[in-house]
Image 1 (cartoon, one colour):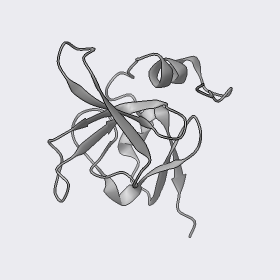
Image 2 (tube, rainbow, N blue to C red):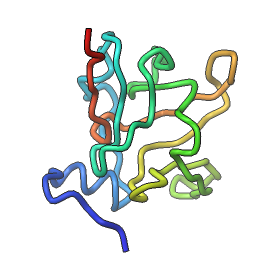
Image 3 (spheres, rainbow, N blue to C red):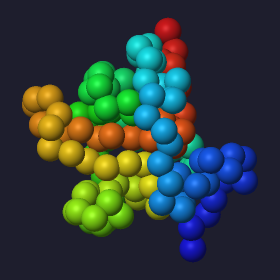
Amino acid sequence: MIKKNPNLTAEQKLVMFEDGTEPPGTSELNNEKREGSYHCANCGIKLFNSEKKYESGSGWPSFFQSLPEVFETKTDHLLGYARTEYHCKNCNAHHGHIFEDGPQPTGKRYCNNGICLVFKEKKK
């Protein structure tokens, strides 16, 4: 059974558990440049480090690498073609899709719905 954080907004629940997507360009995290980490908004597990984030031009926060073993993937066909969806291994919350058009060294683009993430600034 998936445990949903009771503090999630209706929009977060839609994106994380009901196959929704936030509109491109709407996440405040698109412009986040501080050093820190990105965590699952549902369960709080750390997913990405800020140095793996880059500007993809897609309209969503994008990363070229996640932390190890934090996501599981599956193929979805919601748009009529195969895409690799990724979700939090800890709570099964949907975060986005992985594409093969990212920068080196991985060539990956983790295209993440910003609403699914919580940014935590690194303590100085």
